[in-house]
Length: 550
Image (cartoon, rainbow, N blue to C red; front, side, top):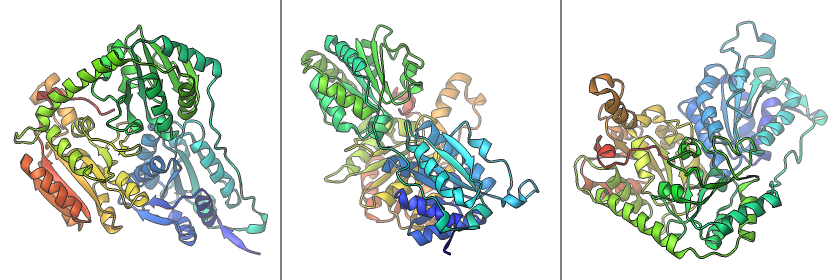
């Protein structure tokens, strides 16, 4: 009679789902899972904080468009990971968090690290539950994968008690799930597609907002086919960045407000009407604009903004239907007008990109970073973790392909930099990974650059150091004055020395001429590198560039 433990069953189900890495911080409650992972050849990546483990698993899910898995111990291990799950929930990322717990026979008796855990996740996950027995581990894991990846993706929490993981089960009695989830897509209603295409055919000034679901549904080709055929100026947000190449004639970046306020028809595909789109309201959108909204989740359609045509479908199916049915259009004058405005705004930004001012302007640093990262055949990925430095860099950095930009998402959670980069480098060791890092956000999970050193995962962290929580400080001082703006200043810390202490490479930059050579040296170091750049704390306000990244 062959016996298998609950921990081994967890590992076997993860291998079945083609998970190659699991992120964790060690804890005895979940040790049987570790043993199973080693047996199955799944690499265990141990971070310096459970929040980092959850963030890394979130990034793993986004990059693979599959599940990312974090394993944490009971009590504080679970609560430390809570923020990572909340962030994944807001970003619709299929993170699976497996949390340990006291043995069932000791629960409610005051066991070590015992607390109610399942209820913590009910409102920030798609499903939260505890596995009641070892033999049910496969069924619960199958449901976790199915729930996390179906419809609008999202996180799942499963609690696994010590004895559920450690007890043995006769393999001959087990039911191992097979074919437990569908990969079928959700096609749009043909009548609704016809309505949307009729609006598009009559439009003189259409516009497109393409968001994260265009990336999740692997729809860049369908997006390109539609916007080229129908000549629709297109703006990308969230994970949708990079779904059109930077030199595509229908890709626009700096004229979104102008296009949306003047558009007669706007297609909003795979992104909600949340704060990033001003909830669909004026002045970002015109009240007179006809709206076509596409979303996999019917509860998102029409939220915050009336829509003229609401389509429930995955982005790929909807865009393919639009591209197939759209009439070929020519909008030369309209496109030329928007492009001229785009060039004018870019020219005003280029003044700051070329600035030799000291302290350094954010745009100058971003331009140098973009040029170095994209030189030749380099294929960089940018991890965004910060406030004003990230918001301004997002306007400048050039993305060569989809999936080359990772930011926290709409929760605006800081501390994703090093953990996201761990996942990115593990999955694509050949790809350059650049962390666009605020000095404030470095403090949250910066110790995971030590994890990167330990696992020999070279990456470059570019710290925009204004010695402040700049995105908060500037408006707070503007509203309340200097004396009533506490808790917004930081020290001009040598983050480069911190990374050097971990065993990496570091350099301080104080003048614009130093930026490019320092970035090249960081890249050539072949290890975890930090370029710590002293930025002008007033630059976002003086150049009129303050704002949240979208």
